[in-house]
Image 1 (tube, rainbow, N blue to C red):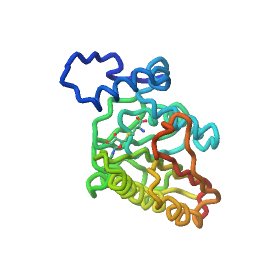
Image 2: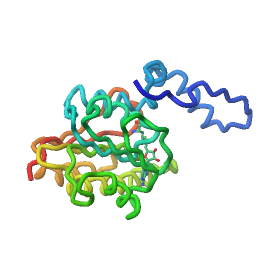
Image 3: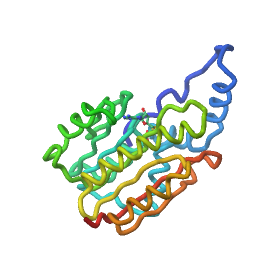
Image 4: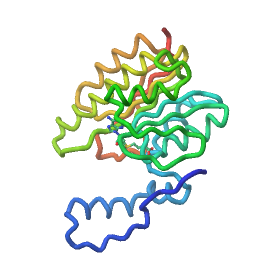
Length: 223
Ligand SMILES: C[S@@+](CC[C@H](N)C(=O)[O-])C[C@H]1O[C@@H](n2cnc3c(N)ncnc32)[C@H](O)[C@@H]1O
């Protein structure tokens, strides 16, 4: 397994930490998925969400080409690379830097910007005409604490990921995306249905029960 969970042993002694930060740190240190990720060498607890989705629908296979949107700190890339192997390709993009992962192409760029998409195309066979086996998106906007605003901001990321997937997922391929339930998820499902054999929502156990986070999985691209 590649990589380490960065910062897992960081000690905070600063009494000026906000209540929210203290609550976050308390929750992180009590979280079994955080401890498991640290022990198993995954960069993030998010790795277990993808692993759970793959347990239900094992859509990644050796040799596949995968685009990972919002990849930092790299848990999903680690999982994907372990499965697609040296014959496969994993390209990850994030606004934030991602520490290197053997065999994975990691881009620090804004997927919502033309430059970010150009950087992605530059790494994919056939560039903007590329067809890939899977587009997986765990992108989330920085939250402001206002539920509707946060949901809408992440939905804008999902819609761009949806557009990218409909342009570039090959026949038989897969689109997986994280979203926050805000009433628009059913419309997304209806838009994806004509293009994929099966579309469903998945709430992994690793996704906190009190979060509105959910994943939409579309498998078997038809057109
Ligand atoms: C929940 S994290 C992803 C965790 C990752 N799947 C893992 O396993 O480590 C969401 C990521 O989406 C990224 N993100 C948000 N907006 C983005 C954008 N416009 N372009 C690229 N990445 C973006 C954030 O920087 C953040 O790192």
